[in-house]
Image (cartoon, rainbow, N blue to C red; front, side, top):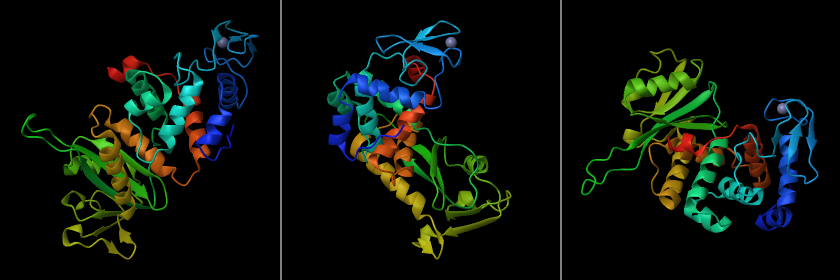
Length: 296
Ligand SMILES: [Zn+2]
């Protein structure tokens, strides 16, 4: 089910009441036919109020949110849709304080909403193959005065040329950690491009087809096709989100922020409606996620 809006005016004019939102989400969720979220049976009946369904087989009732990332939340779909719109289209992300103000919920509720949408924005798996740029960075710093030495978070990123980037938290930037992450995410038949950091010295030795590097230490950034500009542009965007909006990201939830920013980066060529549709579809397919799991 695709939407067709060009800006926030058209978006809010279309999703202007709960019933329209519910019908839209029903079409997204049952795009391939009706099914019961409890037992997957394909025959369900609709109650006259339009809000509830009952399975013909297991006889259990459900709503359009049951078994999705929306869960059984009392938050209206209209609020959810605005949250999805904001999070998928804001170049620098949105804080839970801002979302709370915009849709009229508490900050705690907004945070939980944000986290569930981020869950739907999770990055893909599978091994990358081709010309792949690989790099790592640090996030945050330390404030020796008040809190003592606070360790920075290490993030590793990789991108196939003109493909999606993938980024994730790593415990540190030691050679075995970096090479391990590389092996898990990139096929050995790939051509690896990195900077001249020592951790990449053994890339060919561990079985990679080809490895080239640019000597950042000597201020060399591009050597023909050999550069890490794609992954660097992701780090730049990531840091704009971090400094401009989030200011801090707890180590515990850092991966969710990375997923969110990677989602916007990988879908940056899509229009607003396409980004909204993609996230909404993923939410409909993902099982529910409880507040407990998030905060455990
Ligand atoms: Zn059922």
